Image (tube, rainbow, N blue to C red; front, side, top):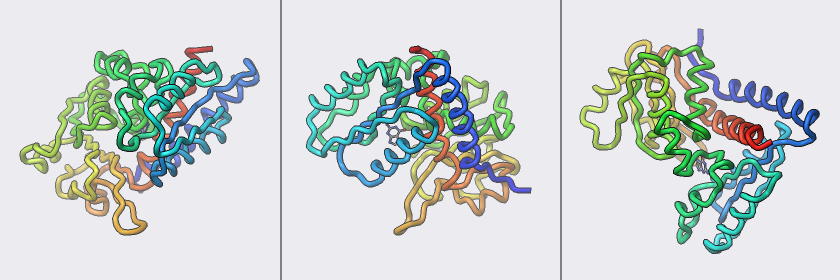
Length: 282
Ligand code: GUN
C-alpha cells in the first residue's frame, strides 16, 4: 500500500465541499464570500500563486478580485487600497501577496489589514490569538498541515512533533497548532545542535526550512509521519522539498510528496478562511 499523503486529492475534496457550501449560501442569502488579492510588482512566482488563488476562488463560486499594482507603487497608495478593501462589504478576505518589492514596509501593510478580514492570519491580533490558544484566522499553510494530518487519520495528541524551521509564516504557527493539539513540540533551526538526533526522536516531522533535501532518510524514525512544507527549485524546472523524499519514504509510515503535498492545501485553507470570515460578517 502507498504511504503517500495525496495533498492534491485532499485539497480537491475540500474545495468541492466549500463549493457546495457556497452554492447553498448563495441560494439562501444571494451573497457569496469575496476575496481580494493584492499583487505588487512583477515577481513571476508571486504572479503564479496569485493567478492560482484567483482561479480556485472562481471555481469554488467565491467572488475573486485581483489588484495588480506596479513595482513603483508607493506605501501610501498601497495602504489606501487596503483601507478601501477594509470598508468594502463585498470583500471578506484580504491577502497582500508577499514578499513586497524593496522600499515598501511589509509590517505596516499587514498591520493595516482589518483583523476581521485577515485571512492570511498575519495581523498581530490574530497571531496573538493563536498564541493564547483562542485562534481566529490561522495562517493557511500551517492550517493545511494540520488538516492533512487529520484527514490522514494521524493522532497528534501525546505525540512527539519536531518542526524544522521557525518562520512566522510556517514554523512558529505550525508549532503552536501542534501544541494546541497536545503534541510535545520541539522547534529546530539553523543553530540546533545534533539536528539528526532530534529529528530521530520525532513521531511527526514537519520540515519548513527551505533547503533542498536537507533532511535525510536516516534521520527519520521507522513509522514516523513526514510533512514536507519545502518547495525548492533545483535547475530549470524541478521542484524538491526539504526532505530527501526517496530515502525518507522507506522509513516513514506516511509522507507528503513535493509537489502535490502541502502546496495545494494552502489555497484550500485560504478559501476556508474566507468562507469563515463571510459567515462571521453576514
Ligand atoms: N507568500 C508566500 N506565501 C504566502 C502566504 O501564505 N501569504 C501571502 N500573503 N504571501 C505569501
